[in-house]
Amino acid sequence: MGVGAVETGRDDFDAGNLSPVDNWSAETYSTTTFQSLPFQIRRVALFVMGASLVAVLAIVILIAHPWSGGGDGSSAGYTGSGSGVPGDTDVPQEPVSSDAPSEDPSPAATDGPSQAAALQGLLQQAITDHQTVISAVQDIQACGSGDGFDADISALTQAGTDRSEIADQVGQASVDRLSGGQEAAQALVTALTESAAADNAFAAWGRDVSNGQCDGQAPTGGRNYKDGESASTRAGKAKEEFVSLWNPIAGEYDLQTITSDDF
Image (tube, rainbow, N blue to C red; front, side, top):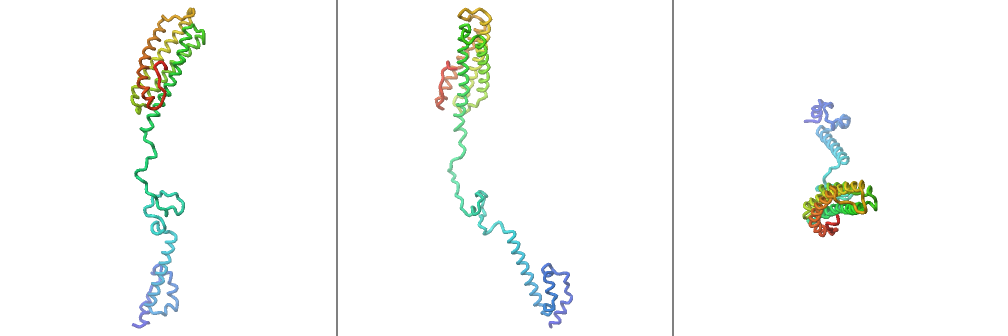
């Protein structure tokens, strides 16, 4: 087939149906020089130009949107644990040994000492109140010759309130890490509750004495005084039980040991 026949075979070529690549080269196709080339050569030229355009577009896309994987220096197994400084991902991460100690200490290693210390803090408040009560009762027995009846009665009433509050706090305290902690806490609650009852009874006795005759020695035959004595006896038994349980705990955690007369 001659060149003229081939060209005649392409006379019905529709430029409107060209692909985007062909449209890009349509002007070149329509030039006189290009039209004078044989049809097969023109088709090869169009293919080469189209392929070149595709390659250029691919390069532009790769530059604008680089692949996340591949040879950019990042590891496929990177977990994001680096410091964020450029180049950190090139530094090999040291493996974490399974034998490394835990950063958080076991609660069992710290709860015992903290619970014992908290219980001792409450006990120390009871010791302070006990000393106040002893002074107030002795002054009432001496007919208020020291601080006076009003001060003594006020001190006893306040001590009763304080001991009741301390008993409530002991009852709510955590002692599960202490050996014999539950029994010790219960004994201390009983001791403080009975001591508070004694404080209130002695305060009432003080009011009785202040309203009557007191010649150097306060009378102790009234009901309020006897109620105070009975409550003190019950408190003393609970204190002895607590001491027998507390002192081993105090020795274990290097805390103060006590006697039943201390609180």
